[in-house]
Image (cartoon, rainbow, N blue to C red):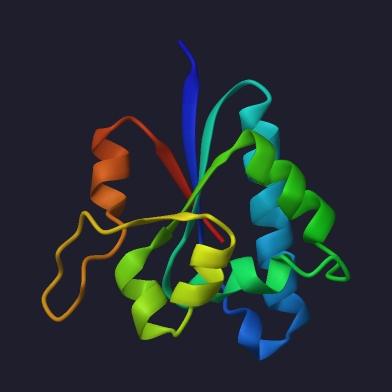
Amino acid sequence: MTSKTAVVVLSDPSTGSEEALGRVFNALATAWEFAQGGEALVVFQGAATRWPAVLADPEHPAHELYTAVKKQVATVASQGCAVVFGATEGVENEDIDQISQNLAPGTNGVASIRELVVSGYSVLTF
């Protein structure tokens, strides 16, 4: 049986903190590692929907890892979160699919953690 792991990134790049960088870096490294022997998925949710635009910069310290992960790992962003956090353009510029299965009140729909669990994913958050 192949493992299925969803790596959910929640950290906010706009803080500019080492903690936020550490979280996204370790999330990407974890997704890359799980993809080596199973199925992996990266979900940018909440303020983390801002990360794709930041990571697209070739000068960013996690750019190389981000690029490698995008080649091997399905990467998605929460649509409702991208709208709320002003990240829609950055997500679209990176050709990242937006998902919105959880039609929580007052949203355009956000990524569904429940759907991931029901679909057999182990969920890790960063």
